[in-house]
Length: 293
Image (cartoon, rainbow, N blue to C red; front, top):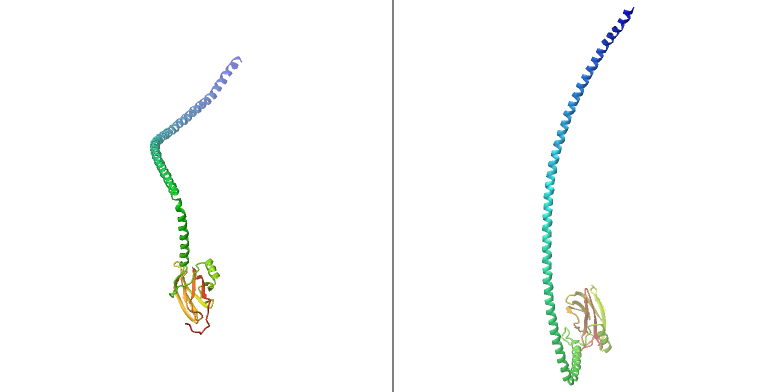
């Protein structure tokens, strides 16, 4: 009995070892497989990492080259700008120097000119003062002659008045010396006050039909404002006479059966297609049909 009891535990331990070996073997195989897988993964990761590192290295190299090129271009541009700035500063300094020199020269020239002008003014003032003194002496020494000068001036004014009156008489277009003529409204008013003739004012415009002025008819046919000339037709005693290319304030004369003296027509203003003036007729009229001496 005792022997059987001692033999059972040995068999049980052998039986347990038999089960553990396959398990351990499987675990070892699994570990080996896991290690192989991990090795392969690590190797792949190393390869990928090497590729990435190489790409980064290439990119860094290109970036360095780009930076170097950009830096060189920037340095060159900066150097060019510095050179341009220096040239501009030099040119500005030279321009300021020239302007300053020119300003100084101009100021000196103006100063010389001013001094010359002042000397000229002083000399002129001296000459004027001397001349004034001479004139004063002359006035003092010739005071008694002023009365004669006033008398001569009065005579000259009288002569001018006579000449003015003479100028207002003119030879008519028919060769007869006209009476006094008026060149404006004030002079015509004075002529009317004298009462020597009849006066009829007119404002005649260019038209197809004649207009009545006094006892005659007038028709304006042409005006020349640049030369103050005009052409008109005079209709009197059923006769029409053209007075062509007449001038301003010229006595235009014509005879009628009603008077021994000629009628006179004077135009004082010539405008475009318009004339303004007056007709002067004799005071003494004769009956139509009576003969003249």
